[in-house]
Length: 272
Image (cartoon, rainbow, N blue to C red; front, side, top):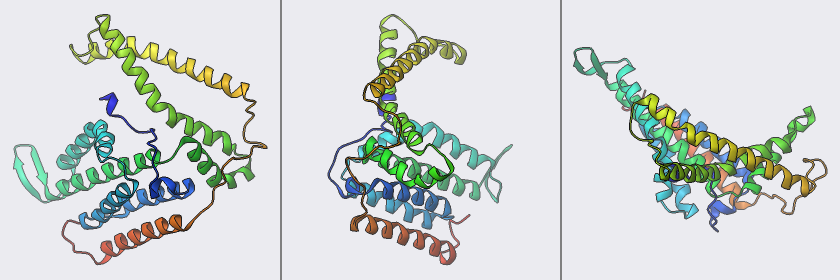
Protein backbone atom coordinates (compact mmCIF):
# COMPACT_ATOMS: atom_id res chain seq x y z
CA UNK A 1 0.00 0.00 0.00
CA UNK A 2 2.77 2.44 0.90
CA UNK A 3 4.52 2.00 -2.43
CA UNK A 4 1.36 3.24 -4.16
CA UNK A 5 1.54 6.66 -2.46
CA UNK A 6 2.92 9.02 -5.10
CA UNK A 7 1.80 12.37 -3.67
CA UNK A 8 4.74 14.77 -3.42
CA UNK A 9 6.78 13.09 -6.16
CA UNK A 10 7.91 14.91 -9.29
CA UNK A 11 7.94 13.17 -12.66
CA UNK A 12 10.14 14.97 -15.22
CA UNK A 13 8.61 15.82 -18.55
CA UNK A 14 8.34 18.46 -21.28
CA UNK A 15 4.59 18.72 -21.65
CA UNK A 16 2.51 21.89 -21.71
CA UNK A 17 1.51 21.31 -18.09
CA UNK A 18 5.14 20.89 -17.02
CA UNK A 19 6.02 24.21 -18.67
CA UNK A 20 3.24 26.22 -17.04
CA UNK A 21 4.24 28.90 -14.57
CA UNK A 22 4.07 27.47 -11.01
CA UNK A 23 2.07 30.50 -9.86
CA UNK A 24 -0.53 29.79 -12.51
CA UNK A 25 -0.61 26.11 -11.55
CA UNK A 26 -1.35 27.01 -7.93
CA UNK A 27 -4.11 29.42 -8.96
CA UNK A 28 -5.58 26.87 -11.35
CA UNK A 29 -5.65 24.07 -8.77
CA UNK A 30 -7.39 26.37 -6.28
CA UNK A 31 -9.92 27.33 -8.96
CA UNK A 32 -10.40 23.67 -9.88
CA UNK A 33 -11.09 22.71 -6.26
CA UNK A 34 -13.63 25.53 -5.95
CA UNK A 35 -15.23 24.38 -9.22
CA UNK A 36 -15.65 20.83 -7.87
CA UNK A 37 -17.58 22.07 -4.84
CA UNK A 38 -19.61 24.64 -6.77
CA UNK A 39 -21.02 21.89 -9.00
CA UNK A 40 -24.25 20.72 -7.37
CA UNK A 41 -25.28 18.02 -9.83
CA UNK A 42 -23.93 15.04 -11.68
CA UNK A 43 -23.87 16.70 -15.10
CA UNK A 44 -22.10 19.83 -13.84
CA UNK A 45 -19.61 17.70 -11.89
CA UNK A 46 -18.82 15.69 -15.02
CA UNK A 47 -17.53 18.94 -16.54
CA UNK A 48 -14.95 19.02 -13.76
CA UNK A 49 -14.07 15.38 -14.44
CA UNK A 50 -13.59 16.15 -18.15
CA UNK A 51 -11.30 19.06 -17.27
CA UNK A 52 -9.20 16.84 -15.02
CA UNK A 53 -8.91 14.22 -17.77
CA UNK A 54 -7.88 16.91 -20.26
CA UNK A 55 -5.13 18.21 -17.97
CA UNK A 56 -3.78 14.70 -17.37
CA UNK A 57 -3.81 14.03 -21.11
CA UNK A 58 -1.87 17.24 -21.75
CA UNK A 59 0.66 16.34 -19.03
CA UNK A 60 1.55 13.11 -20.91
CA UNK A 61 1.89 11.26 -17.61
CA UNK A 62 1.03 7.55 -17.41
CA UNK A 63 -2.61 7.00 -16.49
CA UNK A 64 -1.58 4.46 -13.88
CA UNK A 65 -0.48 7.41 -11.72
CA UNK A 66 -4.15 8.36 -11.34
CA UNK A 67 -4.91 4.90 -9.97
CA UNK A 68 -1.86 5.03 -7.70
CA UNK A 69 -2.83 8.35 -6.17
CA UNK A 70 -6.42 7.21 -5.60
CA UNK A 71 -5.71 3.71 -4.29
CA UNK A 72 -4.43 4.77 -0.83
CA UNK A 73 -7.58 6.83 -0.15
CA UNK A 74 -10.06 4.14 -1.22
CA UNK A 75 -10.97 3.35 2.43
CA UNK A 76 -11.86 7.04 2.94
CA UNK A 77 -13.92 7.09 -0.27
CA UNK A 78 -15.80 3.93 0.71
CA UNK A 79 -16.40 5.21 4.25
CA UNK A 80 -17.72 8.52 2.90
CA UNK A 81 -20.03 6.72 0.48
CA UNK A 82 -21.43 4.46 3.20
CA UNK A 83 -22.11 7.40 5.52
CA UNK A 84 -23.98 9.31 2.81
CA UNK A 85 -25.97 6.31 1.62
CA UNK A 86 -27.27 5.35 5.06
CA UNK A 87 -27.51 8.69 6.85
CA UNK A 88 -28.77 11.18 4.23
CA UNK A 89 -32.52 11.47 4.55
CA UNK A 90 -34.89 11.48 1.60
CA UNK A 91 -37.55 9.43 -0.17
CA UNK A 92 -36.59 5.81 0.54
CA UNK A 93 -35.89 3.49 -2.36
CA UNK A 94 -35.01 0.53 -0.13
CA UNK A 95 -36.10 -0.32 3.40
CA UNK A 96 -35.33 -3.30 5.55
CA UNK A 97 -35.91 -3.22 9.29
CA UNK A 98 -33.91 -0.20 10.57
CA UNK A 99 -31.99 0.22 7.30
CA UNK A 100 -33.28 2.88 4.92
CA UNK A 101 -31.58 3.99 1.70
CA UNK A 102 -32.83 7.06 -0.15
CA UNK A 103 -32.21 8.19 -3.68
CA UNK A 104 -30.81 11.46 -2.36
CA UNK A 105 -28.36 9.53 -0.19
CA UNK A 106 -27.12 7.48 -3.16
CA UNK A 107 -26.75 10.61 -5.31
CA UNK A 108 -24.91 12.45 -2.53
CA UNK A 109 -22.55 9.48 -2.10
CA UNK A 110 -21.79 9.39 -5.84
CA UNK A 111 -21.13 13.14 -6.01
CA UNK A 112 -18.92 13.14 -2.91
CA UNK A 113 -16.85 10.20 -4.20
CA UNK A 114 -16.34 11.93 -7.56
CA UNK A 115 -15.32 15.15 -5.79
CA UNK A 116 -12.78 13.40 -3.57
CA UNK A 117 -11.26 11.49 -6.49
CA UNK A 118 -10.97 14.64 -8.63
CA UNK A 119 -9.61 16.61 -5.68
CA UNK A 120 -6.82 14.11 -4.97
CA UNK A 121 -6.01 13.55 -8.66
CA UNK A 122 -5.89 17.30 -9.38
CA UNK A 123 -3.73 18.07 -6.33
CA UNK A 124 -1.38 15.22 -7.23
CA UNK A 125 -0.98 16.58 -10.76
CA UNK A 126 0.46 19.77 -9.26
CA UNK A 127 3.33 17.93 -7.57
CA UNK A 128 3.76 15.48 -10.46
CA UNK A 129 4.54 18.30 -12.90
CA UNK A 130 6.24 20.91 -10.68
CA UNK A 131 9.70 20.70 -9.15
CA UNK A 132 10.04 21.54 -5.45
CA UNK A 133 12.14 24.62 -6.26
CA UNK A 134 9.57 25.94 -8.75
CA UNK A 135 6.77 25.24 -6.28
CA UNK A 136 8.63 27.19 -3.59
CA UNK A 137 9.14 30.15 -5.93
CA UNK A 138 5.49 30.09 -6.97
CA UNK A 139 4.21 30.01 -3.39
CA UNK A 140 6.56 32.79 -2.37
CA UNK A 141 5.55 35.05 -5.24
CA UNK A 142 1.84 34.51 -4.61
CA UNK A 143 2.18 35.24 -0.90
CA UNK A 144 4.52 38.20 -1.41
CA UNK A 145 1.87 40.82 -0.40
CA UNK A 146 1.86 39.25 3.08
CA UNK A 147 5.41 40.54 3.58
CA UNK A 148 3.94 43.97 4.23
CA UNK A 149 2.50 42.65 7.51
CA UNK A 150 5.82 40.98 8.45
CA UNK A 151 4.82 37.42 7.47
CA UNK A 152 7.93 35.28 6.74
CA UNK A 153 6.73 34.32 3.27
CA UNK A 154 9.94 32.72 2.03
CA UNK A 155 10.37 30.58 5.13
CA UNK A 156 6.74 29.39 5.03
CA UNK A 157 7.04 28.50 1.35
CA UNK A 158 10.27 26.64 2.00
CA UNK A 159 8.78 24.66 4.88
CA UNK A 160 5.70 23.63 2.90
CA UNK A 161 7.78 22.55 -0.07
CA UNK A 162 10.24 20.59 2.06
CA UNK A 163 7.31 18.84 3.74
CA UNK A 164 5.94 17.79 0.34
CA UNK A 165 9.38 16.75 -0.85
CA UNK A 166 9.99 14.47 2.13
CA UNK A 167 6.70 12.56 1.87
CA UNK A 168 8.14 10.03 -0.65
CA UNK A 169 11.38 9.84 1.37
CA UNK A 170 9.55 8.98 4.60
CA UNK A 171 7.38 6.44 2.79
CA UNK A 172 10.49 4.75 1.43
CA UNK A 173 12.05 4.80 4.91
CA UNK A 174 8.89 3.24 6.39
CA UNK A 175 9.02 0.39 3.87
CA UNK A 176 12.65 -0.32 4.75
CA UNK A 177 11.91 -0.34 8.49
CA UNK A 178 8.91 -2.64 8.02
CA UNK A 179 10.99 -5.04 5.91
CA UNK A 180 13.73 -5.03 8.56
CA UNK A 181 11.28 -5.69 11.40
CA UNK A 182 9.61 -8.52 9.50
CA UNK A 183 13.03 -10.05 8.84
CA UNK A 184 13.52 -10.05 12.63
CA UNK A 185 10.27 -11.95 13.08
CA UNK A 186 7.86 -9.12 13.85
CA UNK A 187 4.21 -10.00 13.20
CA UNK A 188 2.27 -6.93 12.03
CA UNK A 189 -0.76 -8.51 10.39
CA UNK A 190 -2.31 -10.94 12.86
CA UNK A 191 -4.17 -10.15 16.08
CA UNK A 192 -6.85 -7.65 17.03
CA UNK A 193 -6.76 -3.89 16.58
CA UNK A 194 -4.88 -3.26 19.84
CA UNK A 195 -2.23 -5.85 19.01
CA UNK A 196 -1.78 -4.38 15.52
CA UNK A 197 -1.41 -0.91 17.04
CA UNK A 198 1.27 -2.21 19.43
CA UNK A 199 3.06 -3.83 16.48
CA UNK A 200 3.47 -0.35 14.94
CA UNK A 201 5.65 0.86 17.83
CA UNK A 202 8.83 -0.84 16.46
CA UNK A 203 8.14 1.02 13.19
CA UNK A 204 7.20 4.46 14.48
CA UNK A 205 10.14 4.90 16.86
CA UNK A 206 12.88 4.26 14.21
CA UNK A 207 10.87 6.34 11.73
CA UNK A 208 10.77 9.35 14.06
CA UNK A 209 14.49 8.95 14.79
CA UNK A 210 15.24 8.81 11.07
CA UNK A 211 13.03 11.84 10.36
CA UNK A 212 14.75 13.95 13.03
CA UNK A 213 18.16 12.84 11.77
CA UNK A 214 17.29 13.83 8.20
CA UNK A 215 15.95 17.18 9.43
CA UNK A 216 19.18 17.82 11.34
CA UNK A 217 21.28 16.91 8.30
CA UNK A 218 19.19 19.19 6.09
CA UNK A 219 19.54 22.10 8.55
CA UNK A 220 23.30 21.56 8.72
CA UNK A 221 23.57 21.47 4.91
CA UNK A 222 21.58 24.72 4.61
CA UNK A 223 23.79 26.41 7.21
CA UNK A 224 26.94 25.24 5.41
CA UNK A 225 25.60 26.88 2.26
CA UNK A 226 25.08 30.15 4.20
CA UNK A 227 21.28 30.00 4.03
CA UNK A 228 19.80 32.89 6.02
CA UNK A 229 16.20 33.00 4.86
CA UNK A 230 14.65 35.01 2.05
CA UNK A 231 16.20 38.40 2.75
CA UNK A 232 18.48 39.47 -0.08
CA UNK A 233 18.08 36.23 -2.03
CA UNK A 234 17.99 36.18 -5.83
CA UNK A 235 16.66 33.53 -8.23
CA UNK A 236 18.41 31.81 -11.07
CA UNK A 237 15.11 31.45 -12.98
CA UNK A 238 12.72 34.36 -13.17
CA UNK A 239 9.03 33.51 -13.36
CA UNK A 240 7.19 34.96 -16.34
CA UNK A 241 3.65 34.37 -17.50
CA UNK A 242 3.28 33.31 -21.13
CA UNK A 243 0.51 32.66 -23.61
CA UNK A 244 0.07 29.04 -22.53
CA UNK A 245 -0.51 30.20 -18.95
CA UNK A 246 -3.25 32.57 -20.08
CA UNK A 247 -4.71 29.80 -22.25
CA UNK A 248 -4.85 27.42 -19.27
CA UNK A 249 -6.51 30.11 -17.16
CA UNK A 250 -9.07 30.74 -19.92
CA UNK A 251 -9.77 27.00 -20.15
CA UNK A 252 -10.52 26.79 -16.42
CA UNK A 253 -12.60 29.98 -16.57
CA UNK A 254 -14.70 28.54 -19.41
CA UNK A 255 -15.16 25.33 -17.43
CA UNK A 256 -16.18 27.33 -14.37
CA UNK A 257 -18.74 29.26 -16.41
CA UNK A 258 -20.07 26.01 -17.90
CA UNK A 259 -20.53 24.54 -14.41
CA UNK A 260 -22.43 27.63 -13.21
CA UNK A 261 -24.66 27.59 -16.31
CA UNK A 262 -25.32 23.88 -15.81
CA UNK A 263 -26.25 24.54 -12.19
CA UNK A 264 -28.75 27.22 -13.25
CA UNK A 265 -30.21 25.89 -16.50
CA UNK A 266 -29.31 22.21 -16.39
CA UNK A 267 -31.84 19.42 -15.89
CA UNK A 268 -33.12 18.86 -12.36
CA UNK A 269 -32.39 15.15 -12.61
CA UNK A 270 -29.32 14.08 -10.63
CA UNK A 271 -29.12 17.37 -8.75
CA UNK A 272 -29.12 17.81 -4.99
